[in-house]
Image 1 (tube, rainbow, N blue to C red):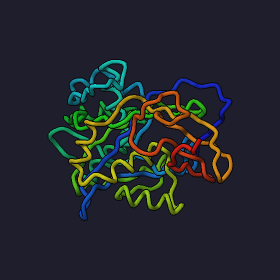
Image 2: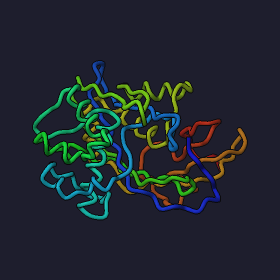
Image 3: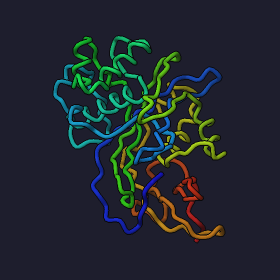
Image 4: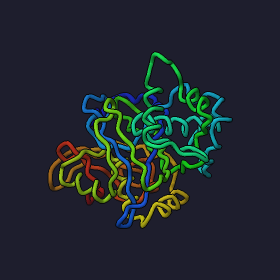
Length: 292
């Protein structure tokens, strides 16, 4: 799932954005929308992820100032300037439309069929129309203010393809549907975080460490409103896992140490949970550092 090499010379990470969509679950707690990346994908193929992807030039169009609400400005900066912050929020929305047929809009709502039609028009390369073109044509506005900055994960330096991914959290109505694109993503579903984690523990699905940790954090929230409230307490300093050797009673393997782990160069924990993800077979499992 990851192309890890301890000896690889680090490449500069590309700006990216991810949108974690949550809604109240009927039996309590929250549900999240997930997609399964195509196994043919060169990055995290076959993994269960949240909609997201890299920043495109069109996301930086200054026309978005009038065609969207202002993005939330967190106390800890997650972008170099206000224009990049807006572009990241736009990218999160665009990728969510492309991969999930869902889109945060201000003061209006499109039904499922309308969202599918909008996605199809955006995907039509013959039209060469950007999302901004389509939003303007329909007199819509993206609701960037609905996106709450939640975390910032940077791909380890040992990975061949690196991204500086900003994670946003947003709520949707209980009847929101969503649908994968059958290209980059091959399936999609709403589920409670604890159920997805159970499926991972059973070996039924694959999760990358940032997705796993996000699900762990959301699994303890009693409802969507509480999940949104938790974003105000989140640390937005970058989390860049460090690839290290892991030796314990089971033998030697590799681990991705997070800030706060004894083998990470950042001594302070930046996200709650266990301090590393250890490679066991083909899965990265959350564990603590081995005893000295």
